[in-house]
Image 1: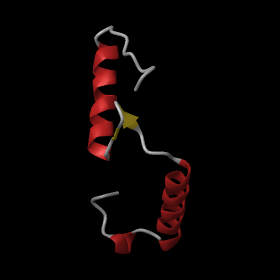
Image 2: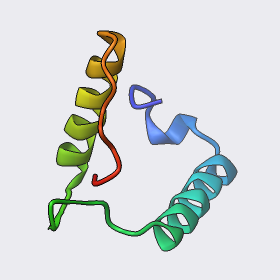
Image 3: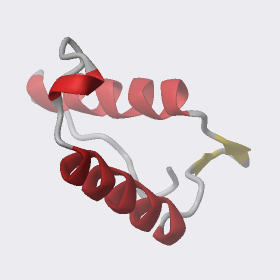
Length: 65
């Protein structure tokens, strides 16, 4: 979808995406780790490290995350 020009995407679809985005953002609280609010990049890196650990047979400790 990122490679398509916006003129090729129906307005109704884009309106629906924006409505979904607003709904998700209104329901979600900021994720914190050790008292620090995570930005999107930090959150992605945390999830990536959990996935890497699980794929290697490990068990992440997410109780305090």
